Image 1 (cartoon, rainbow, N blue to C red):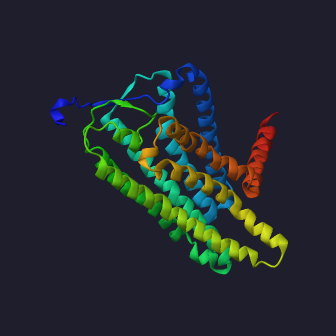
Image 2 (cartoon, rainbow, N blue to C red):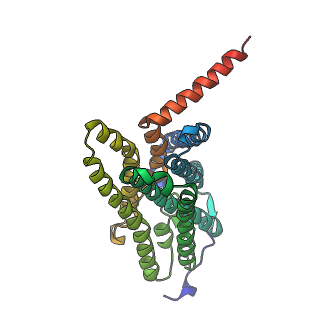
Image 3 (cartoon, rainbow, N blue to C red):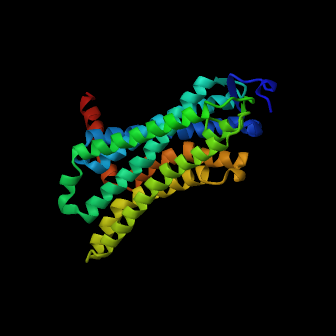
Length: 316
């Protein structure tokens, strides 16, 4: 029980994919391909929204912010994960682990509240269309984005301060990045208070925005059902489907990962869930919003056609 009986560590080694060592080449190729697609998709979304003036609306402003956030989010996690598939023994310092955890928490929470802001935007557009441009002005949009980022930063500071006050006696992290629970399991201190803090914070940053989004959609659906024409109802609902798909998957994965009881933690299950929200979920944003959104598809076709015409005219 005495701390002097332990050897405190100064770095960690990720053991997340050690049980899949014989499949590391396949995993590397799959994850690297998905990573490139995620980066390319999100960059294309931001470029299209920037270039196409008719997409300079609150809905697409939030979408571009989400794409930028998702891009940085994957940069924080995936390159290190890919490197770990090549060299499982490569250590990460405590400072490096704290930095990765800080950006991961900040961006994950930022994404949660950006999705909430997008839900509010859809609520105003459908339930209060005559005052939409007044309510969702540039100042309000900027404040919502800044608020989402500020909440992420504040929570990350609280979580990092809590976790890295602990003393660690084991250096092998049963995960592929510095997530809160796997790191706290390495502590030789009593983590009861830290577990309670983690659960309360996780509940607030997942349940509150998720609740706000679903309340918005209850009001949205109620308003849509009151539209007289079937075509009008279809058009109104179509503007929400893409966002709703991303919301359900995003909050679903986050809830399973961070709101389940600690006693139910299993390495393989945690790994599968983590891969879902760090590798697969980020690619949903560009896929869903480009394949299902006619305005984005049309803008992309217009930009490509314009580029091809310029290339054709430059050829002698």
